[in-house]
Amino acid sequence: MPKKAVIIGAGPGGLATAMRLLASGYQVDVFEKSSVIGGRTSKLALGNYSFDLGPSSLTMPHQLTSLFMNSHRNLHNYLTLLPIDPLYRLFFPSGKTFAPSGNQKATIQELNRVFPGNETNFYHFMSGNAKKILYLTPLLDYSFGSLTDFLRPTMLRAIPSLSIGRTLIDETSRYFEDEELQLAFTFQMKYMGMSPWEIPGIYSVLPFSEYYYGSFHPTGGQSQILQAMQTVIEEYHGRIHLNSRVEKIHTSKHEITGIELQDGHLVTADHYILNADLSYAINNLFITDKPLKFKTNMPQKKYSASAFVIYLGLNTLLPIDHQTILFPENYKVHADQTTNLKILSDEFSIHITNPSVTDTTMAPIGHSAVRIMVPVPNNESQIDWDQEREPFRNKIFETVKAKLHLDDLEEHIVEEHVITPKEWEKDFHIHLGAIFGMMQSFKQIGMGNPVNKLHQQFKNLFVVGTSAHTGTSLPYILESAKYAVKKIIKKDS
Image 1: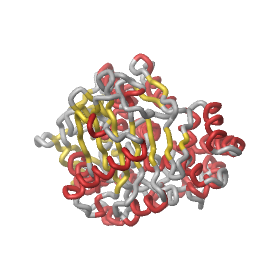
Image 2 (image 1 turned 90 degrees about the horizontal axis):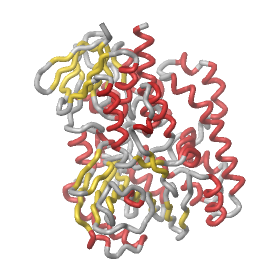
Image 3 (image 1 turned 30 degrees about the horizontal axis):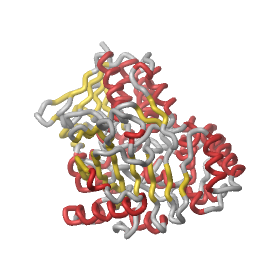
Image 4 (image 1 turned 180 degrees about the horizontal axis):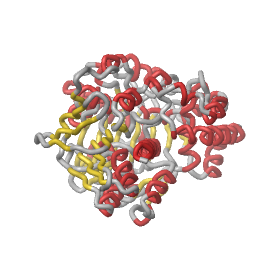
């Protein structure tokens, strides 16, 4: 009889784990509370317009290719990946605009146009981070939940390249003196809900990945990645149970004994994989004889920023690139107010995604499906979003219209939907509405990550997703699934 695995949550981490387990001969059931798969990577439909609820682009596509190869599938039989070029257009306070490309020759031309004299610096940044990522990749095979992992030869060899003791801004300033150019290689940390003045310098590999591998948009949106994964799971006769919320995780002293669904049904398995928001699960799902040893430390953990997101269906093709970033006058002040002081900035960073210029399936021909995302404090801020929603929405519109000269933007709105930190917490079960989970600081990764404490306490429980591995983007979520499945197979061998 094949071993049974139960997966809680049909986000990308859960579905990638299901694919790998099914390909290895396991029987797999995935339980998802929503009526659709994907979690924060799902599709939002408003009338004739389709939106990516969360991620706006895919980088490092070879990680996805590897996942499908492991399931004896060709990714390109399931997805069409369209290159996003330019990667984005950055609007700086000085009035400069910078539009780098996944093509390094094109990026050099743009660099020489906007920031002349930095061509050699760019090559040094790229070569330095290529070396860094080579040393980093083998480390993803370990959790660093114990001192033993830190003493492995792969770790010792990597130490000189890990930028230990430096923040991302420190690291980037080694290559670029211009502060606006530094922003072009650090603003990506907003995808992790953190400030480049605080996040460890090791994360320079994330902007490097965009500049090296490029960014891609699957036809139909990022949610199509999840649909492709679901298709493979069903081809392997794996089962995805929608509208099946897990209410409780039952435990004995050292293992999970079953999960209880909303209807009271108890499901048992040999292995359990958690793909829910980690803090929500720890605070709400586990039924134990004694409190989880580390649960009392959870309130002291620091959490990422949240996001105020506006989804717009427009009856015009918006004349801007696939991705547009508008910087505030002082990005450092904005980042500090958002992540530490937890107050709404007078000025803010705005990320506009306009996939209709790349993909005509997201909206009717000649129309646009646009997403406007602004990083805001998580719900530790106690901001009353019922009161702030409308004035903040209006302030965003005024900023976008002024900076992009889109005076008639609101006249073209056919559909509109807003998600605030309140909805991220209430409707998506994300602790504090912190959509990127716990901050990826040195104190909260490795031995400071509750994931490792869960692994130690419950031998048949494995965690995947944004909290499980360093990095919150899709490639690192896929790595978390790969790591978990390796541990499961090793346990059963």
